[in-house]
Image 1 (cartoon, one colour):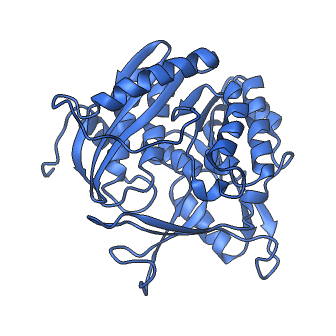
Image 2: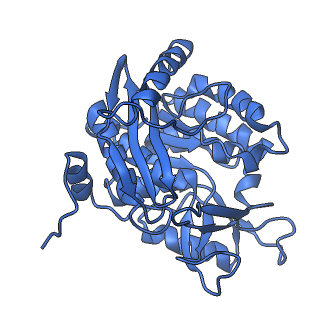
Length: 358
């Protein structure tokens, strides 16, 4: 890696055009707000806009007006687009197209609901050899690679290039973070949860920072809180031994982090985070009965704050605090990506309130 790497962070993943019906529903809406979003991309954008890291996105688009719209939205977020692979459009989208994500926010008893139209996307067809990782990591230089189970789960070829990217990152001393991010819709024809975990176990030896806990059991909803002094005491007690077991299995892992969420209604959740880092556990403050405008992307905003805390601050407690605060703030604004500032994140992480600022 060069002495002055060109990038602090590169994310490898698919970026979708999100069409948001606002307070309405997808099935009845006559107008939509356009956002860009994607599990891996959201991390790069949050890292750039809130925390000031030099970030870029490794993805692919069909070269048409929709692809150029997504590119323009990415540019507005300050993420470097020079590494995007542009694929000639076939005129109909029969061979290659750009993915669209229709997502409604939900409210009260009506949960958030997504309908993703991503078949034959350019990103799902990315394959080994499409990016020169030795050039990216060895010549240009990058401190951190982030990717995850959504991109790896798109196709056999994206699984292969995810492994290739992580292998190259390890070779060049680049820190690798990987968000397990299980999505049933991606795996319903490819082995379900067991299939996704088989791939994740292939990738785990190359990962340094794992988001989520790799296990053989699908994730379950949080239980009713039983400890009035700690709303996530039960979840904490369950996750700690799982994290320790995972760390013992994969000594390359120096950090394992997980968000804590309990859904009361679509617009009121409990929120927090737990992190194991180099032998010690760290918890964020709890956010009980937290009011939500749009929950999509909160976990990705958590990861952006976690990366900043580890990469820039070298402080695991700050990392989990900033991550949880950034994720909380992301849920107060529409769209997948955060609109928060670093001073806002710091204030909330330190116990700040929502009083008017003038």
